[in-house]
Each structure stands twice: as structure tokens, then as C-alpha cells.
Image (cartoon, rainbow, N blue to C red; front, side, top):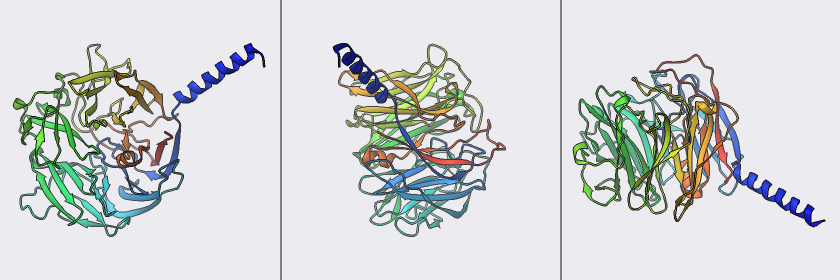
Length: 441
């Protein structure tokens, strides 16, 4: 081989290597057909749609008639999980199929029992627990908290489960009078206890919309914005933050100052000032890095008059705000109920070395996509963007298996093409295939 041909060969090899490195490879497992007339199966505040305990992955969704479908499979923590899901149709059904708020959220406790909450929008608690560890047979439990006579469970919205490393669970929801309630499940006693009845100030002209993460050190992190004036999303403003290192009993600011629920707007300083009428979206997602520093995903309209994605994160000294992408078209975030929005709310994760920020954007034909970057000592490298699917997924928002990420740093996304009518309602759409998209990282 001549020196010239060898050089050409090496350049070609380097080019191919760079291309291979730049491409995120995926693997998709089909599960079963699911309800697609609203985005109820794919709303971002499903916590979780997909979850893993030990070597078993669980999934939950509504079928075309609104019945809860449960599934499970063995996963391969070291490689691709090619095993198909075993699914069962439960007798439990969504009452208001036109309302995309009525999501299913699941978690598995330290003994392997599956917990499930579903069909909530200012409605009585509907809570199920499996009859045995790893079982898909569920029993409805009429009351979650039995040791508190004032446990208001007759008006529940946005139910979310979170796992602790000791096997216990957190259950968070919006309850009567728009209060934000936190329950704690003790695996040892198999009982729920009320930790916080009202986390945020709420009254006739003010409401908090929050997102939570529980770090690998069992610290609860919560960020939120305030909405006011007839609860119009145009009035969304500010990003606020608090944390708890003792399972929700006491709370601190990012600087360690003690604060006590109820969190009052007049007593708290936002970590990011964002004014009203900027398309600031509510109920997004957050995560933490290996130093337990918070990262908050959101979108809002910046100085360029275009609504773009943002990453607001704490660098150890102060909160930074990075704009992701370069969107060209704008829209107006306004109206009541679930809205048909051209971009999804974002979800992000990090392992302390890389950040993955999942989205769906009509400018990119509503394909499932990711912004990703590396974390260096001097800060974050520029984000790259990549589509993960070839086809459109319409109203899909990212839901991922957070427990599988915590335990094995593997990325599995709940995927389904769903549709959403503006201000609630049902579209005449046929059921679509529920899938799990796995990133080969």
C-alpha cells in the first residue's frame, strides 16, 4: 500500500468512525395497540409509564376501549432487550376518555409489588396494588392513607410515583383546593403515610405547577412555576426550586437555607426570572448530576421572539440558562385544558458525563428526537441534535424508564403515536402500536 493510499484509507476510517460516533443507534420492541384519540398514554407527567425492578420491566397503558393494559418482560441490563412483553387486560377502565389528564402512573416497591394510579382529573383516588410480587393481577385499594382522617383523596390530579433506594415510594399529586400532596410508602409495613398536605401556596388567583426528581442519594428535588389570573398558561412565570434530604420532612433552598411548606411566592426568590406572556410551559421534567445539582428542562419565548427549549442548571455557584436548538416558528400557549402544541414538553437525564434531552418538534416532522452533549470540567460542550425515528409521532411526549437509568444507565423510552385535540376532546383516530425505544448506549 502506498503512502498516499494509506493516508486516504486512514482518513476514510476516521470519517467513518466519526459518523458512527455521531449516530445514536436504537432498537424498538412492539408491545400492543393502545388508545390514540388523545395524548393520555403519552403525556410527560406519567411517572412512570415504564419502570424496572431487578430484572423485570413493567409497562402500563390504555387500550382502545380505555381499559388498563399491563405488561412485563425480562430485560438484559448489558445489551439489547429483545424479549417481548407479556400483557394482560385488566378490568379497570378510564371513565373520561376525552380528558388527556387521566394518565396511568406506576412504580414497584422494594418487595416487588406493582403500584398503579390512573384516571384522575379532580376525581377520587383510583389506586391499585398487585396481589403478589411481580404479578400483573391488581387489587383496587379504596384509601391510600389510613392513619390520617384528613387525608383528602377525593379530588386527585397528576398522580406521580417516585422510588427510593431503600425500596420505599413517594406519591405526589394535586389535591383538593389545588394543594400539592406528598405521601410516603414504607415497604416494611406496607403502609402509606402523609408527609406533606400542602407544599405550595394556592388560592383563587395563584397555582403552582411542579416537576420532581429523586436523586440516587434519595434527595427530593422540586422545581415549579406560578400561574395566575383564571389559570391561563399565558400567566406562567418564574422558575423556583427547593430540595429535601430527609424524605420530605424538611426543605431547603439550593444554598441550604431552611424553608417550610407552605412555600409562599412572596417569600421565595426565583432561580430564573421568566416573565408572563413568554410561553413558559408547565410540568416539564428535571434531573440531577453526580453532585446532586439540579437540571431543569423547559421551554419559553426568549429575546429572539421565538419559543425555544432551555436547560436551566445549577453549576455549584449559580443557575445557568442555555438555549437548545434554533427554532424558526412560534406559537401561542393559551387556553384551558390540554392543548395541541407543536412541540412536546422536554425530558432530560444525565449520568454526570453526558446529558440527554428528549423532545418532539413539528418543525422536524414531529419525530422523536434528542439533544445531547458531554459535561466537561469547564462546562457543557455544545449540544447536538438527532432524530431517533423516521416517522412522525404527533402528540407524543417523552416518558422513560427512570429506574432502569438509575440502576444500569440504559435508556428505554415509552413510544406511541398519539393525537390531541385542542382544549380536550376526542379525535377519530384508530389505535396505534405501543413500543419501547431503546438507545444502544
